[in-house]
Image (cartoon, rainbow, N blue to C red; front, side, top):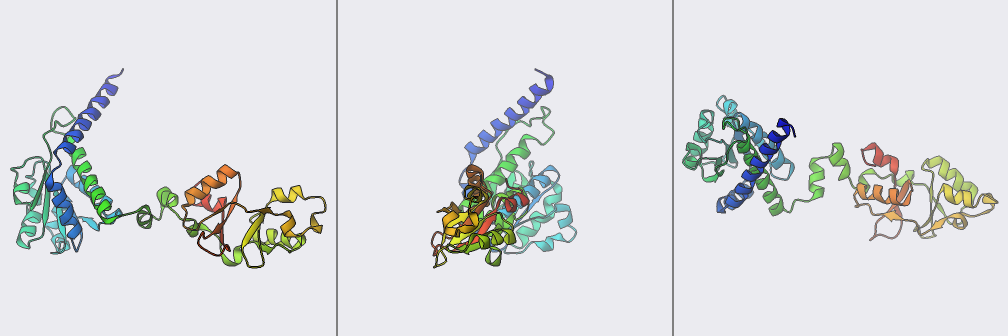
Length: 319
């Protein structure tokens, strides 16, 4: 085993032990912080300097993407005008391992002057930050993973984990769902995975549909015109009763044009609901080795609302 591997395991175990200790020390102050943040009429303003500033940016981003309006404010910029971003409706979350970071003085002073609720996170209960805070969240004693005690490693990991805990607790209080999360993440792989079938499906005039008594010559033209390689078959009331695929065409190749659509179709085809996740639709298509699914509202009248093709899913990164 190499020295680098030994170091990696030591660092990770050191930080893991610290996180376990942090979990064991969570108390009523955490619940109080969550309630204050839930009651905020404005935003959660997150501040930190140096490495704590990087963690603060991440916490603000996590809060904002999970239903709690939040913004990072740089303490040094705050001293040069950005204090104007803070309002009496906000709650300020300030991070500092030592609790004595000088650049935080103006932010702390501003919150005290205008009675803006402040939650402090630091490792020393007697520090200036925590003494001035309305709610103090104390990080438990734990060695930095660097071994020298000077590089922020364990302390920043604990602060980050505490921020995640706050965000998740707020999510649960707000009953924040995957659908809400998708609204804040419309792009990228995550947005694609949380897309609904209705977001990707073809509808209205794009749907390839014929009635059961349509001659197969006309059904073939509909397949060609719409370009999905399938056509749905409806009854006299417009309900989807079957589907014609290339496999159905091959099975009825002899005398195909002498048939009606209802005589060639596969009855009761597999369909998907418009509110289903597109990821689920991909799974169905892969399992069934098919390329299309007609979309039916389970509470509707049985009429096809749309058609989802595997290519629509591939275009957004699914598949």
